[in-house]
Length: 362
Ligand code: PMP
Image (spheres, helix red, strand yellow):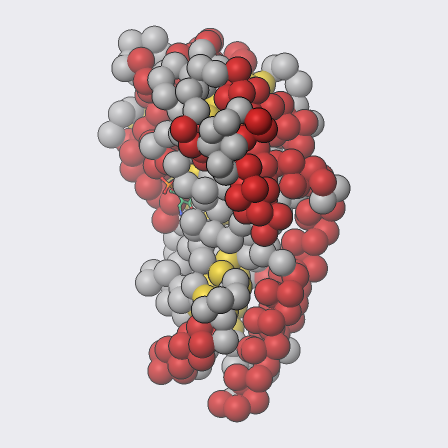
């Protein structure tokens, strides 16, 4: 294959071509330093500028001020599942989890190893086809924090408005929809995301944390697992995943150049509509997993009439350069991951292929 394909993989996922080209251009000699970012000391002034610039761009995109820090950590979103309760869940408290999918379950199970948790709501019944209504959420009396998963990568559901819990710290795993739309980030005490879907390559986990949370964190835990360690050292306590952070910076700059989060959101809505329309106008040939009100604009999950057709669909799509469409085994069927960097043309090509396939087989 000499041309680039449309990559619908859930993550690591497609990145903007302009970003890849910029990285390629700078790869051997970064801004006249005579070396690649991948070779550069994390204590160099060039890398410190990349690190600080990436933090301030993310804050700017989210409209956050100095009440917040952006940290660049390792260990994936999965390490955050443990780090959050280690830092914030006191012995006499409970941590509230809203279960909307497998990743939310994993976060809750990890916290339950470290303290008391409470399931404030779950939509597991019916295999996570929706986000709960506000009246279904019952938090505990002495809540340390409330944890949600803003976009459910596997099931293809997404919170379209966030619940309000007053002063209780709201924490969100935004791994699969961070920087995909405007929202009031100042309502959150902590937001985390593995970079490999909407932000850049794998290897770095972005944590956006309110200053007062950093101070509240438990001090009697390993140094590397304390947010305060990373905040005090500007994410340079130990060797950071420097090339990944650099790439996140380029992606953030690309988002800003697209017109910021409002422009990206409009683009994402239009892209998703192309594929959801192909599902909704298929007369039942394609069926969406998610209930309409809970549909994700990032991961579109759908089934075909039988598994045989699903296999055929997948191999024919791959043959045409539409890759990574096989759904997760817990949902079956297909999943089109269309993060920020998926161009509209990719969504159009998939929607066209869906109609064509249906005409042939339906
Ligand atoms: N949370 C969500 C919502 C995810 O989609 C994923 C990865 N697919 C994870 C957490 C786990 O992320 P990581 O692999 O970075 O640990």
